[in-house]
Image 1 (cartoon, rainbow, N blue to C red):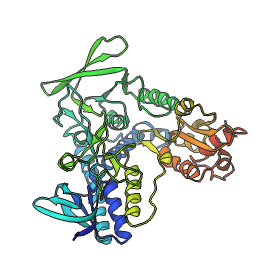
Image 2: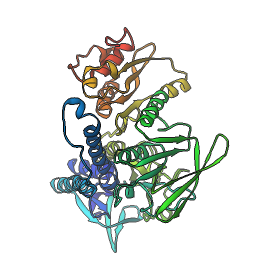
Image 3: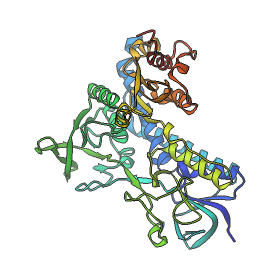
Length: 462
């Protein structure tokens, strides 16, 4: 007999949300997690600690550049790096302990250790085998390797090492111009490091709307980040506590090098399934090493399901959470569902960048007729008052029906503003619906309404 209705492997955002939802729906549930704390990469060495450092260094930037303009006269703060790291660790602790509390509240068992799956319906942890009617693999992802680059988490680091450097480096090279690299590069730039970002493609943040990405790159360069695009890293040479990054420019294949105290490798992530025994099980994978699932999150082996970073789709914590809730509801006999057309993505730099749905590039590729409504934060009274007027809101709507197809924001609180548009899209709203909704003044959200107005009769403050 099965000990549990459901065993979830991995206590990251996908796994712990799946477990809590399943328990709420009456399933006897356990989670296997080998870390000393719950929350997975996101809460321990990802989303949460990086946001703590982003917040702290943003406050430093405000004190250095904007306080005096507002009549706040004081000495410029100095950085106590040890205390900043302690603040970050405290934030991690509060969040991970919160998950422990939620497990107890919802009667979810935490089986401590690393899991393997000897057979369908069985999860082995150490020498003990636990039975389960269903197994959900939510083991997450790990940083991708880069040929010619050896990680030591001291001089050459992944995001994990970059969140716990013993000292603030005077210089840093970031390999990869995606979300992780730009966020952590921004942190260390604000702390005084000379930061160089090397990106293989011709622009940063691949997948973002092209116009937004170009404007974003200009803003980051103005902030002092040295961004090299179209550059292929060949190797990293370590010597005397420093590193030299060798790269070729793709345009002319010429060789170049740049030296730094720390090199951050931020070239993406890959599914983490090590030790689960998937090969022996015969579980079907995709060509990219992801677990193949059907639309109900079922794998090729009956009773085993998978969600989050180990399956196809964007590697985002909230995508994993939604899948976790959906599969829990399916296992409880309900109709779990995720709308993959309305999953927002956010870059938590300053300014923030947020997007949802289609880009101009994807719409053009599909041959779909669309219209654009744009509004600059320069026309937003709240943004100007807060020294946050860089950027714009851009809404894409169907040319005939006016239905919102996508939205892209670069500016203050973009990661929060995008959700108004997500809700609108979830209910099939038109740009006019947003435009006719009263927005409080003065708020950043008025820029969203103005962009919606610009899709049709025209913005008021443009």
